[in-house]
Length: 492
Image (cartoon, rainbow, N blue to C red; front, side, top):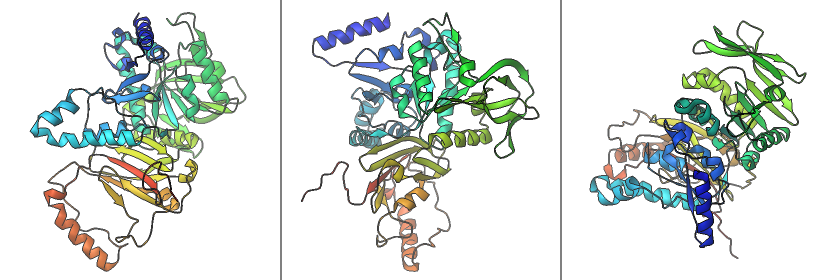
């Protein structure tokens, strides 16, 4: 009923030569989401001019559409809002109370105008950029709601947790599983349990084409099937996709994984529910067994030019329990197949978005645990950018960063190799007056004269209120040294 009404409304607006914006939301993440009547997949096929996406609501599945506009409540912090909203799209004018009225009407919140201005400026400057994420989580809200009802939010939160874990190593998206046209933008798709159950025949065909054309599908507790919209007349094709037939073993005391590649093991957080897969295809490759058994835990099946990587246990549970060793292994496995141009080499930053516009690159970074540091590597050759030198800007601090040890700029601009080796980024708490500098800086790369000056000036200005900045997040920008604006045209 809701979809039909919205279709009539879209057609009416277009008949009157009006543009219309439809709101999309991740219903399965809300306890009463099933009652909203939102079928996001269907709504995106009605021909609306824009989609309104509420950034702070974690509506990740709907950011991928070119005509999506970000908006909504700020949510966590302005730093979080500025990072997740930088997606190559303009910010919507459909702002709500706390980021328009509050900064303007209340003197006690006068600082709120600065991040709002920054949000509008950044989103406009980077509108039309290319999304550089190479991995996406598939989100199937309809199946979740039909099968689990009020219990769907707990399962949906596993998707959000996996997204957060992946962000510690590379940029990752979440997308509606019905968005077949956008599969080709990624090297890896990740499907948790329920994500591939009860699909439409068209969606299932699209996913199979993605894999057969060379894509990689990660599947947790695989259950792959097509059905009618109400999940009846289900056609289960799990065995054909995974190359295995499985039987539920129930709750058994499985300690963890024995990884074959390097003969190491990873422990689970608790007793694990597993499936016992039996190979029915000669193409099966076993990456890991369950510890102390010959039962395959992670298998790979080839389909055409691509692969289906099957986890025969609830991997999402390990993310929720913060099993850091398993998280590291999973991220390294995904990175191997996704082959991103931008990664975090070390640290605890979250890569929220990565964009390319012409020869310029932006990486938005955030962490809810501050102060925090990280090292970001950008392989410009993978992005087809070849310049003699580059400038590094940090929009959060409003600064340009010189090469290490270069106080006056005499050493020239950053090289592509230096940027690939890693750019260190630090985020400290916004205006924390009690934050203290270390007793001694490592200034060994500077000359003795420059080191003395840097130490004296930094310590003198640190305690001055007039020089304090808002460091809550960071947006790292790589720009060619001879381009001073995106899309700058050279004149003779």
